[in-house]
Length: 217
Image 1 (spheres, rainbow, N blue to C red):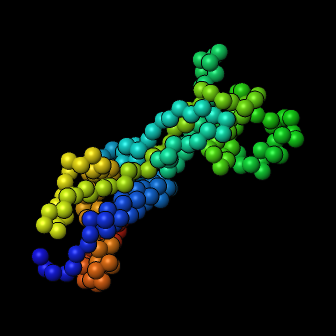
Image 2: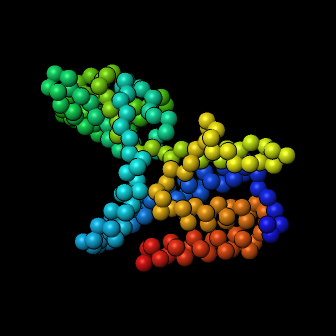
């Protein structure tokens, strides 16, 4: 309307994904920060509770085959790895160790893993779970999934891209509904950079910074 320029649907999708991931990744930095300060007794005003609610949408559980199995393709953060002892019908947690530590553990019998004190290591193909022996089945991982890339689908009519939400590959934002304003301002800021519109970028950036400061006071 103001003839400031245009961004293509492809550019919008890139901006939308970048804005969504930026907000999503900030959840974990903010959670770490708020966990270090006293909360309050009001659940709906406690920032830790609010952040955990926003993150909980992305908590997933996935059964793997173990033994160097590949991890879920949408993995963002691995939270917990468990092995089910089918004889006992009981789950045991596996502790992460790096490869150097694992090599050292093999030379000291007292710290070698057992079926009741499991470990797992990361490798190029996924994870390996080790107890009395290498576990190949009954492995489950609990993890935080990355939000799906938003996809503004469209059809071209008279050389113009028109929004088409009925396309099979249409994908809406997956963040909490309360992030709508933040998403808008971040996308506008990115659009301002592309269009070389310093006013648009400055307005959107100021709005984002003001909201962030208010949340952290």
